[in-house]
Image (tube, rainbow, N blue to C red):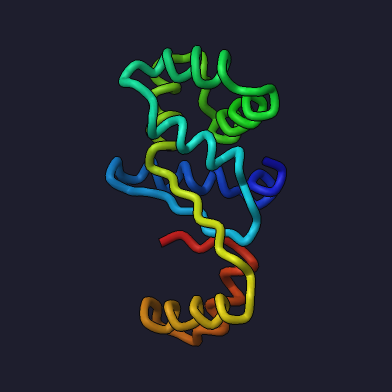
Length: 138
């Protein structure tokens, strides 16, 4: 969580997800983030009852480390998981979030540069370097 927190990734995801209920947020990183992946999977596989998600998937069936990650995630979103409306938002945000681990290699960098060239206007290397310094939101 500290890496996500220090880069403001969770807060920026909230901004994107609140803009429109059809928006999704994808995090692509060379760093493994299994806790976030687990929460996303749990939210996508939960029942229609948000209280079941909290009671069974988080509080009963999860280990302390994942529970603490969930609580920190909620804190970063500035949402209270004990409030029903906020819990619905938390689950919705997780359901509209995807995580992709992308190996950090020379070949992968070239693939990214090619995609930048086709998707964005400007110098692809400058855009790539900008992206590595901060999160770009579209």
